[in-house]
Image (cartoon, rainbow, N blue to C red; front, side, top):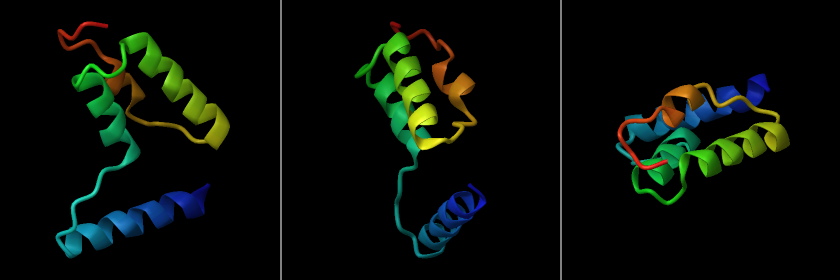
Length: 72
């Protein structure tokens, strides 16, 4: 687990240093909600599936799933 996080951190750092745009998983999940591609319950299920299958924790899932006057 530690290596994956460290690798991800290094990739993001490299991209920022070299002015390369990137999206991480949390950005993609937010976009799915903001663009109303997935409803809140669908997004919650997707996050649960990702966490279970990839043995990972999406730290900002609570923030992503918060209702900001979007149709859920």
